[in-house]
Length: 302
Image 1 (cartoon, rainbow, N blue to C red):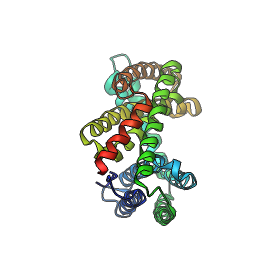
Image 2: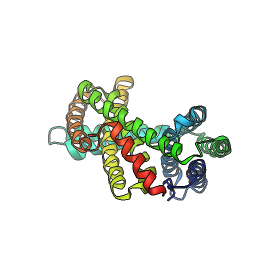
Image 3: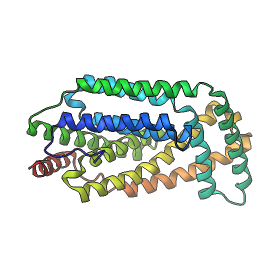
C-alpha cells in the first residue's frame, strides 16, 4: 500500500504517509547506490515523478503547497538528468536498430549509435560534480519532508472524496483533449503533453485503486504500456532536437538524412500503436469518471 490511498483514512495523513515513503526511498537509493550512481539516479527520479503525481491529485485543495513542492521536485530532478538524457538517446538508437534496420541503413545506424555512445561517454566524464548534485538532492528531499507538515487537506469524508474524484477526472479530461490535439496536429509537443497526462492518469488510478482494485489496476497497466510507447516517441523528438542543435553529434549529412527517414517511420508506428492502446482508456466523459470514482470511494470508505 506504499502508493495507495486507503479509503476511510484521514486524507492529509494518507498523502503525507505516501509522500514520506517516496522521499525516504529516494534518499535511501541515492545514498546507498546499490546498482551504481546512474541507476540510483534513475530510480530516484521515478520517486520524484510519483511525488508530483500525488501532489497534483490534491492540488485544488492546496494550490500554494502544490506550486511550491512541484517546483522543488521538478528542479531537483533536472539537476540529475544530464547523463540519463544522453543515455536515453543511445537507447533510442538501439530501439531504431531493432525495429527499423535494413540492409541499406544498418551500417549507418550503427555508426550513429557509436557517435551517440561517444557523446554519452564525454558527458559522463565532464560531469565532475555529480556527487555534489546527489548530495544536494538528498538535502532537498529532506526539505520536502519538512514541508509536508504544512499540508492541510479536507477532513470531512465527503469533501475528501470529492477532491480525489475531481483531481483524477480533471487530469483524465485533459488527457482526452491531449489525445485529440496530438492526433490532429501530429506535433511532438502535443504528443509529449499526452504522455504527461497518461503518466499522471496511471499514478492517479494507482492511488485510487483500493476503491476498485481490478478495474483501476488494469487501467494503470494499460496507461503504463501507453506511457512507454509515448516515452519512445518523446525520445525520438529529443533526438530530433539534438540533430537541429548539434548535428556533429550524429554524423554526416547522409547519416542524418537516413536517420530522419527511419525516425519518421518509427514515429508513425508508435502513433498508431498509442491510438490503439488508449482508445478504450480515454473513451468516457470526465464527468462520468468523476461520478464513478466518487461512488466507488464512498462505498470503499464504508
